[in-house]
Image (cartoon, rainbow, N blue to C red; front, side):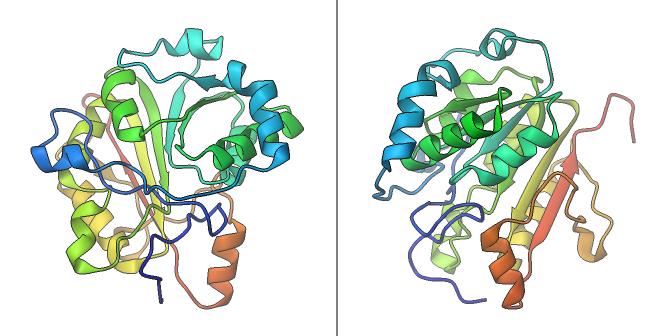
Length: 259
């Protein structure tokens, strides 16, 4: 599969939407402090997106603060919380939230057009179980997500940084996973998806190497069948028509005493 030299788009976004890059969440090494979970790109916010921000932003966009978030207060109810890192233009995010109304979704995206697009989808679909933090997801994870508080984490189509010299910028690395796992509640899961095969193997290997994670994948080479809740996006459909593969990687932090 051929990828451009610039950061490619996320699966549920247009060509102007970045994928998450690399980072760490707690006590990061010095080199991680210079890496964010996103790539800055210019993008124009449409009139409809801005109207959605103006109408709904105060209710659904949470300010970034370096303090633990009270999920029940933020969502107005007690429910399991799933964190999504980098939602692009939000079509997959909205679909998942509609399909799983019994859960809350804490979604991070830095780009205003994507935030506006998701808010518009929430408005059109009557979706109330999403809250957005328009900030670097690595810092949100580090400062706002309490230990053992997440039922799951979604990282769909992050930037593959396909050139070998750029692999250190990838999000799924041992330091990041070591910071992420303590935020998972027992029984919580990490679900990654990518259209870059070599990165899929790295994701699998990095997660497999963490002592507190169990691979739930049943397909050859330890990959997972696409779960029912993850929609096939337009970007993914186009790639599949061109013969490109998509790999889902699914790991779980077991319950205490669970093998």
